[in-house]
Length: 433
Image (cartoon, rainbow, N blue to C red):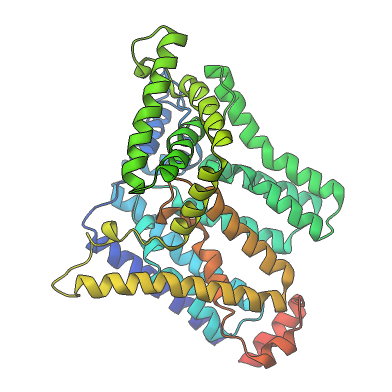
């Protein structure tokens, strides 16, 4: 097992080194516009105001998952760099988990190391783990849910996994319907009906409890009011913008202003206020939602085009403009770095897709779960808001898939499809020594 321990140590140290190097080169650029919307309610909780920065204005725009993660750091008055370093450290540990999962499914040691090192090379992963954002915590929770489902499907375990799935929603609300995908997978795996029902109930328990809190405080039953806002500003407006033709971003900004003006008029008439700033985001969402749904229903073609565009953006966007701020043009030509980053993005997708095909031959259940999860998170963020960072939480699963690109015919025949018992794994590891 010395080689295994050496491989694990190598993966951990290389991933941590590249992440820490990026943190050093970023020169303290740890914040994103969204960062402060998580820090404010965290400070509110620490000061006894509840989940709000103002006791008279409960927070409904953000969910409490990531602020709870931030609380110990802010309580100790840690610097932002400490938060970011811990996120990089967590990614190094996640890379070890990627290696171990690939090995458990029979990937060769070299292939498993190669897959794990994706987290040392993927620029989107490194860049957004260097920000005070939900991407790192989301990646860990998604990976944990997938791994636990692969190996623990008793009723009691499914309740625990369901609660973990619900906790993910409170970190990243876009995961709201993921439990449905997982439930279908469990049915396909012929899990007991009572176990599937228990999983579903556990998955919705925390989100429903949080939505009930919001309803009690604001009168609006919602997990996050940002959903309705995004539906109007980035889905409905984007559907109209893409039908308009021309530069998408220019048309999107134009349509957003038009829809904001319509909402402002509705709010003034309905609430008797002079400005939308006078009402909470929860109350505002009651105007955004119906208008957005009406536009999307009347513009199905624009909605379809907008979704397809968003899907592609989530897949291949590199966020080069942000990465370029860290690149030292005196050391490495910026043009060469940009080409390398774009090429890497394409190569990773090619490796992940071909790896999933190989994994399907070895274990179709695992391949289906990984593929369905990747597709879900890419698709659910496929709107006008699409950007590279929405890909970050599923890169660890892409790394697992990429580990199976290097798979010989003999390996596949020896393992057999779907056979991954502990005894077989132990025999395979002993043979590899």
